[in-house]
Image (cartoon, rainbow, N blue to C red; front, top):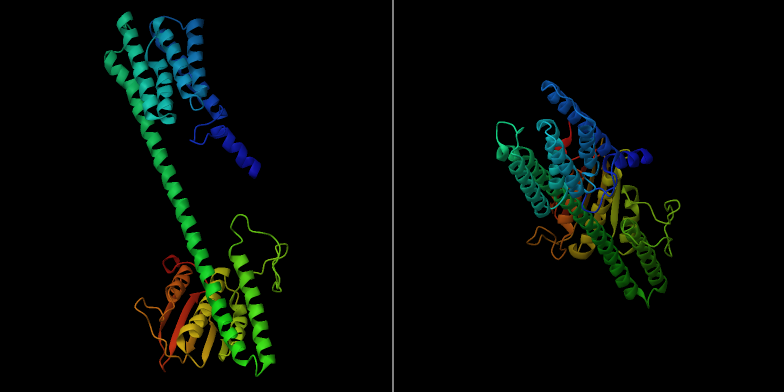
Length: 411
């Protein structure tokens, strides 16, 4: 398939310069020039036949030269215009009819305007128009159409140049729009990565900080408990590094291989842990528990296979919610509930703390946690509610569809 695509691209464009103009003659340009040449020759022969004359060999040769110039109309448009126009003037100088052969120069003028900058093509148009008017004045243009020489010049020279300029402008606008779209995708990807890094680093540092506090508190009285906290910190930091490697693996220059403490279940041949999902929520809960905060985990319904985007969104929402509980809630207990329904997956994180909402709708001091979670839920077509719980404390409820399309796209 790749060879077919490459062959088609070469057939149509002949390979392109950075500005879009082909480096070499494309096969379709050769075919196009041949067809126009045949039509011009047949039209000229028909017009001469009406006068009782025949198209001689010299006339056929000039039509062929004019058509041959169009072969390079995209690769070297100015050279193509020069050859085609010179052959056309020579053809007319022999007293042959105007109309059929003029189409060849019109195509050459259009191509120069479409593939060269406006100032360059305008200068070429001015030179060609001046040469044609001088030729007509010198010969008297006995065979010119009744519309007159100036009107004819406007028709077969200025009109195609205007069309070529318009096509070039449209192509430029389309290129800019494509570039803007590409930059928009790049920006979206940067925001996604920034959100991933925020969630990974924020959660890991919060739990590590909690574990460090526990270790310092029991260091002299219960050394074995301090050792457990240090071991948990080591495992959590290794996990965070592995998740960062997964999140950033699409960046150029990512180093291959694994980090010390690589988690089991790495992707074959990459040394990278798979993208986390709801099946790893127990790991988050256990890490927080080992830091000293009791967390209950309830899973309702039969675990169903969900798209990776939904799986990751649910995991990150639980991770960020527990991070906020650890850092800001002052809670004595938390609860995580994951419920699998026939069409949705709901994630609920509650606590009995006293942390409130800041002026930006987030928990006091948490910065961008809740807005980021709302963006995650919305990115897969879900919703997220956050606020005081019915019985006090704080509650985060996310409802994610198993079908990650935006709500407006569902039938």
